[in-house]
Image (cartoon, rainbow, N blue to C red; front, side):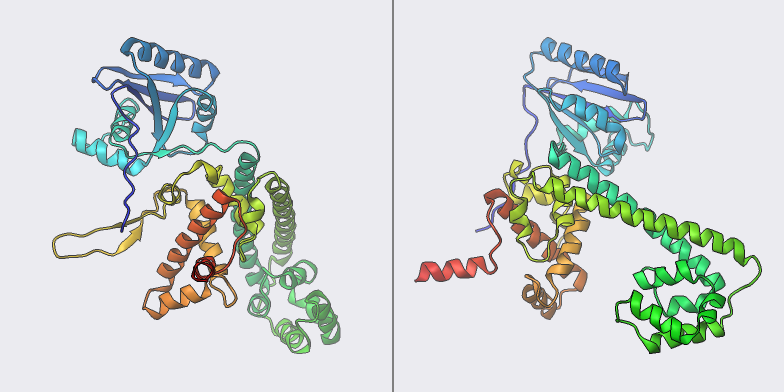
Length: 417
């Protein structure tokens, strides 16, 4: 027997629907009652005084039309909506987000024009909400809120570090191109040589014996004489430039310092994540899943807010954008794809967790191999594993129990006995 999730019905005969077009300093609001009566688009500031005016307009119109429920929606946006969201979170309202793609399509359908204006957008957002195409706004609180901020800060720091690392490699290539093919700058060993022996001349001046000692010490014995000889010979015969080298070395030293500072910052963020995870009742249960670490668990809780607020698997699949769809027509049967219309960071965390889970000793290795044996592409198989992991994570958080491998099989044997 197959079950199908019905579209959530937010709107009824007693619901006031409010659309908001978010801006940096000014928002535009629009109110609509089920009988078609409305308040024309109006602007209000992105500050406390503006929020109070906005809320008073809502209450006045609600009382005038005798409405019971209030649904407020806006497009998925950046930080500019956060002050309004936090102002409304303690109000008797339901907040939802709509996909900008949906508003664009509805706007062109209703007006037969791609015209975009601040006064037009809140009306269209309201139309989309009335059609039921919206997601509940997740507003984490307490430790979950801190975990979301820490996870986002870590993502920004990692992006910044990648940019600096790419820039560092470009500069090293100019003065010592051969080094990049022998040791990677992203490794501890590579970074040590770049910081302390930046040029081919400094490495050659050390001598082969000293280079070998340094390499063994920094790599903790993983690299020895043969690799040291490669570095030494590369330094002897390097084709790196000489003109303007001192200026390049100055920038390299600056980049290395910034990368090390970013590494320290990322490490501090992860320590803070571990501290806040202790305040989440079911975090220990999630960490019992082999291959899923503290960073992943912290990130998922930050994105979801609280797994226990969701009643069904399809709800949380949709939040992650891992819900499936197909495009079929006539005799053509389309393939299933994930919607990708949810939280992208949540999908990223689950995807990397899936990579760990399918390793030789991972909990999903056998299932993954079965998928590959059936001819499923690797990426699709990993996405399928991501969906399976999310199901497991949701069940464990809901019941606050530790992960048991092959639980269904073991439980089946117990019943048979």
